[in-house]
Amino acid sequence: GIARAGREKRYRLGVMGGTFDPIHHGHLVAASEVAAKFGLDEVVFVPTGVPWQKSHRDVSLAEDRYLMTVIATASNPRFSVSRVDIDRPGNTYTVDTLKDLRRERGEDVDLFFITGADAVRQILTWRGADELFDLAHFVGVTRPGVPMTADDLKHLPPKAVTLLEVPALAISSTNCRERSRQGEPIWYLVPDGIVQYIAKRGLYPQDQSGVPRDR
Ligand code: ATP
Ligand code: MG
Image 1 (cartoon, rainbow, N blue to C red):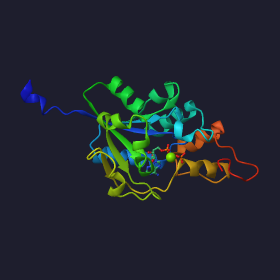
Image 2 (image 1 turned 45 degrees about the vertical axis):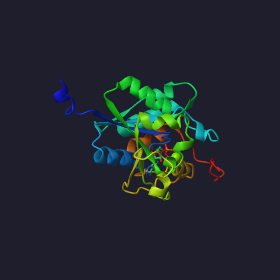
Image 3 (image 1 turned 135 degrees about the vertical axis):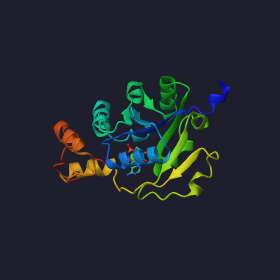
Image 4 (image 1 turned 120 degrees about the horizontal axis):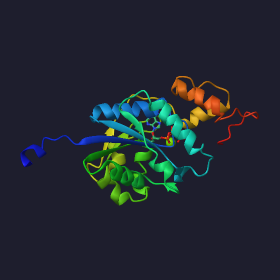
C-alpha cells in the first residue's frame, strides 16, 4: 500500500559501456568503486557494437570483445554483461543502450551510467543528449592523464552527473594493444584470463616492422 511504497528499495543498476578492446583493470576498478559508493545492486558491462567515435581504426570483432568482458567479470556475482549493443545493427549510441536496458529491466530500476572523465566532457555531443539525463544518472570517474573539475560539468544540467574519484590506474586499452604489438607484457594490466584469450586468438599480433599499427 501507500504506506509501504516509500520504503521499498528500488533496484540500482550500474551501466558500464565501453569498447573493451581489451577490458582492463581500470574498467573493473571504476565499476567496483562506483558500485560500492552508490550502493549498486549490479553493474552490467555493455560492449559497444560499432563505436561511432572509433571508426577510424580496426576494432576487434564484437564477439571477441564480448567474450573478454564475460571472462573478466565472471568471478564477481554483482557484475554481468549485456549484448544489447552488439546485437543492435549500426552504430552504438548510449541513448539506445539505456532505452534497451530500461525496456529489458522494467520501470522499477534506477540506472547509473558510469563513464570516464574523457567521455564526461563529450556527453552533450552524444546523440539524444536531451533525453540522456532522464534515462539515467551519470557518474563520471576520474582517469589518470585526464584532469577533471567541477568546471567541466557546468554546461550539463544540475545534478545530472556526479563526479567520483577512483583509485588511479594509468591503464588504457590503446596502451594494452600497443604493448601486445611490441611484444611487451600486459600481465597485471588486464586479468590473467584476458592475457591468455588475447594470445589464444592472436588479437593484437606483434608488429614485425616495430611500428604500432594504430599510429
Ligand atoms: P581505448 O584506449 O581503446 O579508447 P579505453 O581504455 O579508453 O580504450 P574504453 O573501452 O574506451 O577503454 O572505455 C570505456 C569506459 O571506461 C570509458 O568511459 C572510459 O573513460 C573508462 N575508462 C577506461 N579506462 C579507464 C581508467 N583507467 N580509469 C577510469 N576510467 C577508465
Ligand atoms: Mg577510450
